[in-house]
Length: 233
Image 1 (cartoon, rainbow, N blue to C red):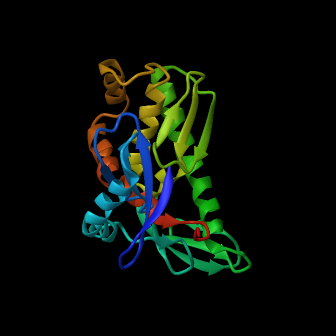
Image 2: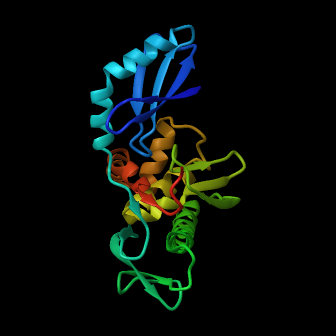
Image 3: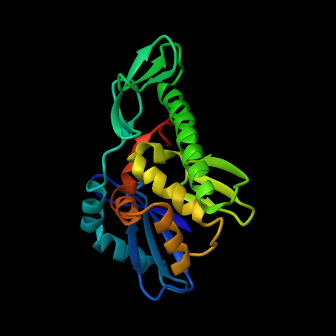
């Protein structure tokens, strides 16, 4: 892969990626981080690829403009947490005030978004562990452990050893969506595939799961608009 800059207002970073399977030039603008990737046949001309990207500059700019705006999880901002909108406020100590719909961050915190992330991860673990325990009882199987990560390509996974992994950002989704993902991954303790028997198992664990699955497809990317780290260069 190589990186280039397309002239424009503003200029756009473009990643060129060669692929043995590509038969033509194709552009992709990530709605998660705005990364622009041009995939090209392995032996195609790089100069022609850049010309192609320049020809599509207006389309690229439109796609970038359509991305959900980024929100830094700092004091004064609001986040969707466990089904409710919660405002970040400064206080004496870090804690979640669920009744008051507040995320309170200590005034001594060096970087408030990191403190917010820690509180949300703890709540996500609590909710996901409870949901996983419930559904594991429903299938009569035990999982070995739960790991939380900040993944972009998947919301959860289940290993052959019964280890469950979840994106902690599920705490930003409606509670029923979080529970669907837990049911989905626990169903893999029985069926390590996505065949008819697997989906039947998910349906028995969480009837009506299709609506939550569609929510993730349509709105899942918006969970990544919230930033909890320093801005990358």
